[in-house]
Length: 503
Image (cartoon, rainbow, N blue to C red; front, side):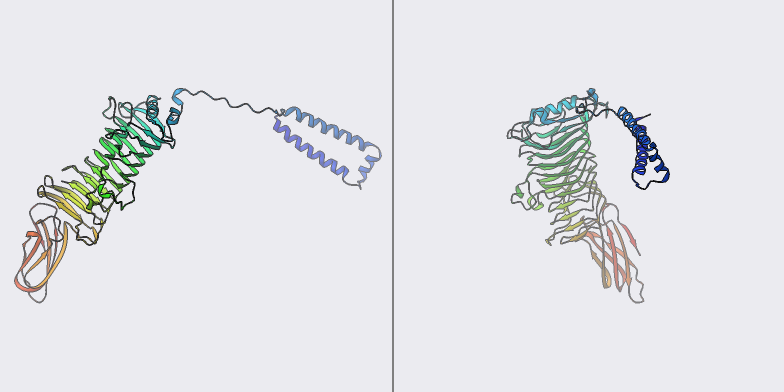
């Protein structure tokens, strides 16, 4: 019988025994049969037998229960894990890095990174990219002084994270370097240097001696929750490669919250995208000459707040510098006293964004091309200085190839509306009516679609026709004089033959 069963049986029998003893001893007026037992001496015999039975049960329980040892339980023995199953977290202080930032930690940090690269791997990601299995360089919340860039030791690796601390440039840090440099010191069989490198939860203080992060020819790089400041070149530079995602981060050459006395002297570029298929999401740029420079294709900017340097001081929030091949989407952004410049834009969307402080959009002619542009559903707020919300820079020549350009449905307060779609009316008694759209239409002397209707009073039914659209003025004429009102809608956006619709 198991000890637990013995324990249960013991409990039951003890309960019965106690009940019996209480029944025997607890009543002074015993029933007749009990009095007979006492009288003839059999009562004492029954009590002795019960005591002996109870003693036997206690003895059996003591034998079945192991004795309690007074010595402490032995400590669990550590099990040696095979190399491939050990944790892949590399804590930099164990390599001698100084978390106080008083002494140079460059070599210690580079040793930790090298160990992560030489650690166990889990096959491959892209062809030629070794999977490091999620190796983690943990900065442990320290502030580390470095005198040269933290450069990954070799190309051809991925699935690595660097996170959790502060990196500060020393006084002799190279002014053309980056605190974290994802450029390859050696080549690999892959067409990319690295894949799936994550840089997260870091503060990078460049001390005006270089840039923050350089990503070169890498695939699926993630820069998340970083604060990058005091750069004199670029906060983040992305060259070639694909799919670098920059999110939830803050960048500024100077630490300020606007209204800085030295704003007109801000320099540098916070983010420079010189590659394709990248995304900048939920990022604040609070000081730099240029917030985001884009010279690659198919990039997306969403939730970006730029108050880096006011347009009046020569700053630009977002600069699209890829003439004739823009392919950029700017959605739900906040341009705060600084605007957007696009050179020869082709396939550009700017929508659902807010422009404050006379910030505007400038389309800049380089080769005279503007095609596939949608500037719609934005808000503009200014100071009643007559600033136009969308402007043209044709100093290098006029826009000659204009196709599929839509500037419409924007709302304006304190600035001048510009659009490629406009509506107007004119009323008079005579044979000619003119509606002037030049204050509203974006492109000069370009109307390629007119829709109008003429409403006259009285009994006369005049014949009427569109007579002229030069200089963005629409002229309607009738064959007889009538009191009438004309309603006109015009469209720009295509340099094609005029299309006329009348009712």
